[in-house]
Structure formats: structure tokens, C-alpha cells
Image 1 (cartoon, rainbow, N blue to C red):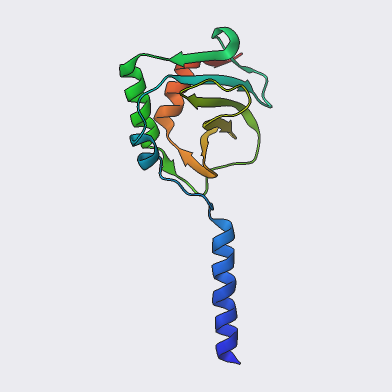
Image 2 (cartoon, rainbow, N blue to C red):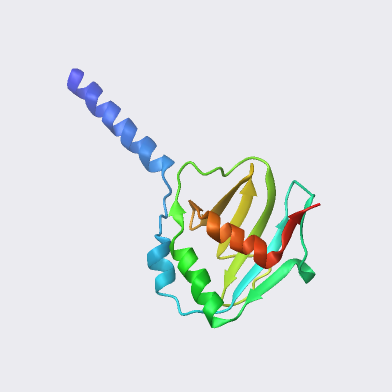
Length: 145
């Protein structure tokens, strides 16, 4: 009886762990280091806090200089997986990041400012990189009224 109880608890913990952690974990370092530098499209999307806005025309910015692309890719490679990053809450704004070609409805990565913190959504995982978030804010000239 005791053996069955221990096995049931271990099985339950395994199932909970499997469901809790991201199913499609992809290392940004391995994913972005294989990519050839291509144009990077940043698109500002308003969220729940309407005080935030982009000062760029059409809320878009294109990174097309090779040196800036290399710098941006190295920042993408250094995204840190964070299981506890906020993924629900008050979303001030989001930035859709597309690599290679511009897509209006889909994105390769998404950066959101949630509860005053920056979170990157990539392949069903939550990531952080404060320096990259600040760089994106500078590119799009995001400010609060």
C-alpha cells in the first residue's frame, strides 16, 4: 500500500511538472545564432494603458543596418528563460518583432510591458532581457504622455 502511494505521488509530481513547464522550450542562443542577419521589423501595439505611445510614424521601425542587426541578434541570443515572468496582468503595450519579412498579424517574438516589467514571448516560453527592452523602446521612441 505504501509503495503504491509513493508511486502515485511521484507520478502526480511528474505530470504536474510536465504540464507546468513550457512544452516547446527552444534556446534563443541556438535559434538566433544560426540565422543570417536580415531586416528586423518592430511594430508598436497599444495595450490597456493608453498613455503609452510611439513617436515613430505608423508605430513601426525597421533595423536594416548590418551593425545594428548584429547587435540586435546578439541581444536576442542572450534572452534569459524565466518561468516566473509575468504573463498576465495589466499590459501597457506590446511590440511585435518580425525577422526577415514584415507580417501584419503574426510575429516571431513579442515583447510586452506587463505590470511595469518587460517580458518576451518566444516559442511558448517566457524570457527577459532588460537591455534589449530598453533598446526597443529607444528605436520606437516609446514614451508616456
